[in-house]
Image 1 (spheres, helix red, strand yellow):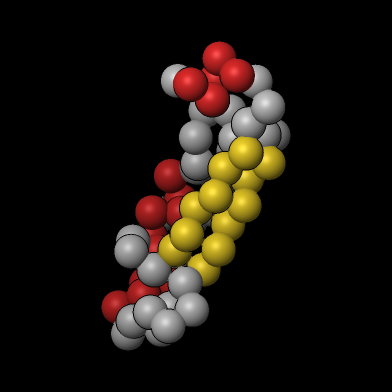
Image 2 (tube, one colour):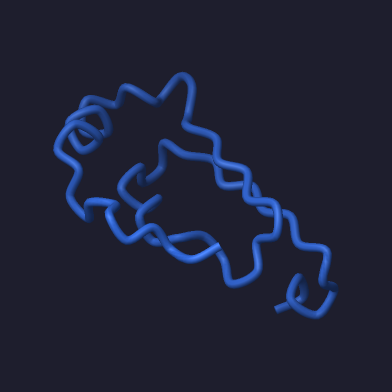
Length: 64
């Protein structure tokens, strides 16, 4: 699946929520099935308030 082209690199509401530590008790959880190539950069805005879980069936890609 190609990267989302219209995702803001500076989402103001999300930045406010992260700065306010809104997700401390219950972090955002993102599950990527077919995680070839890693996670999209736009998830970085959540900093330490997100859990990224990736599954990849291709053993070579998984090892990378």
